[in-house]
Image 1 (cartoon, rainbow, N blue to C red):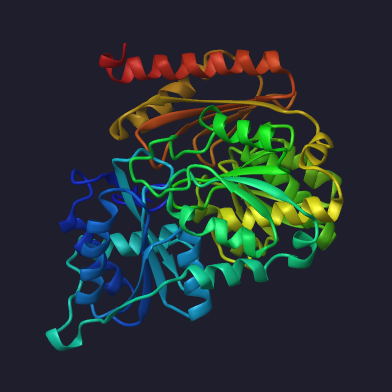
Image 2 (cartoon, helix red, strand yellow; image 1 turned 90 degrees about the horizontal axis):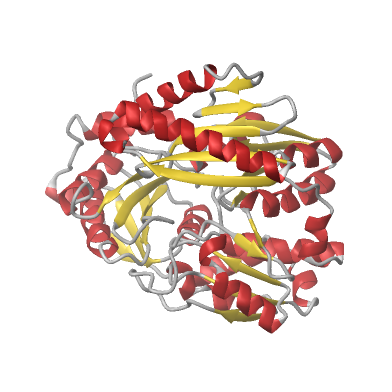
Length: 463
């Protein structure tokens, strides 16, 4: 199967007014309408980025020209738009967002009526329409646009999916960091309605993200850690620009990667269901294997990205999907990550277990993980990966090689290294993990050397 020309790991993404222009946005709108058969109603939302509004309107124009009605959700978190699709019975949705990427990056996420992103097969169908003149309708058949406020619907929806009495009676205090993104508009109100005492930092929507990078990770969450420590909060929780990722800080001020917090959910769900299938991408920590072994779970691995995870959820009828970036998917809710739902669910688990988040995590064995990224132009990614594999084979090491997505090298002691080109950014990523912290440093060095050498051989300018 040849490579997709527009879609990456999650939607279509590029630099605003360079790869992603108003003209392209309009054509994408017409294409989405054609893809849906030039009928029906879709929700359209956007994040806080400076170009998002103009591209949002250009896209809507295209959808209307294709004869499909639009419920314009305006500035709203992606999960809020998806709850509108579910609760209002819409035919799909699009969100104009750059998610966790830099302010100048913008893109389009496309969803079907079941709230799942387009599958790989559907993405091919979409691109075939895009590159072969999508259909516009007659002047008197164009769609209608209605502005809607989804904030109250979002509030009611997430509160219906948690044990509200247990949360509200526990006297929780949380610190929330929406990172100046779209969730800043709604998070305070929702947690107050849940009976939670809440402090919000970086709570003013701002497309320049003046206080921290929109990608929530340990090195940019120092303010959240400080607020949790100083306020004595039960948890801290941060998200990205469109509100799907959830990265937690425990009551001791430690930032938890999505693997670890996700395994708190995995344990809870497996205990509740007395087992079940969990879906996770190939770059997930070994910790998930440990949890599944102890609590009667079965793990199914997929390629990286929400579309692949959700396809796996559907295929095996899984009870939960998790991604190390902090995306947690409860299939009975929406088929996408939801920061606010995940944070409320974490409070529910803490209340039910009557243990702090730090105590819940301390029950797990310790795995050490390191992640690195190297700039790599899109055109070089395939060659770099092939050269890196050739270089590794020269080392003559005993290991299992898995090629579901990138190159994952699993050593006999369980340590592993994943070399994988990003599907959303011009970078090549390295993931390494081991229960031995020294081995992690050694593996990270090996992975870095492999990628640097491969880059240099593929493009001499990288020497």
